[in-house]
Length: 77
Image (tube, rainbow, N blue to C red; front, side, top):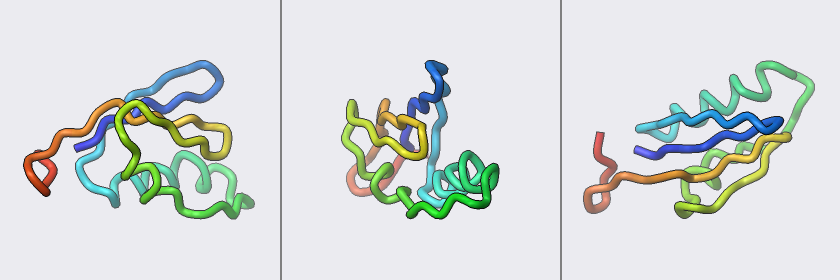
């Protein structure tokens, strides 16, 4: 499971995801679905692989990795 801080216009939202496809669906709904003209790449892998305390900027959003929970090579649900 990962926990992300999503920042837009000085507002912070905290979201958790247990699977990468959940993050991908959320990013689509957050950005591309609201503005279908946008043709940006898919940052899911880049965001999923962030180290704790680092961030990624995407279409005006700053997405920061707040935490990861792992057990060996598997995420804990």
